[in-house]
Image 1 (cartoon, rainbow, N blue to C red):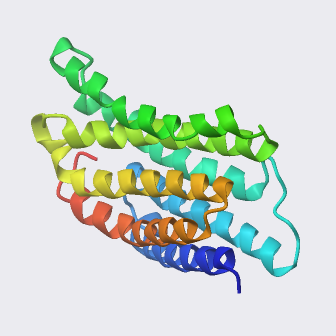
Image 2 (cartoon, rainbow, N blue to C red):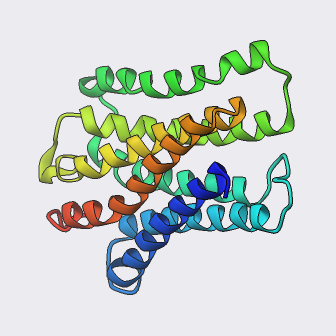
Length: 221
């Protein structure tokens, strides 16, 4: 088996276990919508890996552009972004000048992530795959911004962000490792691809147990 197949099998196994955990402890119970959206994010990662593995195992080339694997990765980070931005950020940040510093600092992470793709546009031929990955990276970057923001934002009443900082740290590392994996794939750096993929697998496996444990401390979520 190739490194790509092994890596995606590891991610599939981890995301499948994570989804099964989320299915029985969150989705089928009366859990908050915030948690359910993260379960769906893990499910999207799982489906993305299933598609890629089927392509590999049937001897077909992975098509360039927005195939099922890419669209499901987009779905994964759109769910993470929507959960944080749509359901938590307004509670944690009232938009006042008090939090302006943290809003500005939080842009550091997406700027760094997006900057990682700049050399490929400057020195490589622009391909459909690069454009598709860039779209994924943009969604990953905006998701990472809010995970980082909620790590550094001072706590407010009811512990809106304090209680789920472990989850935000794991989600941020998932964003970072995904970015590394995309870069490694474009650059054909197979060993870095595998390291980043194993990191993604770990974070997909632990993200839901950590979130459930932390979120249950705060009944307002």
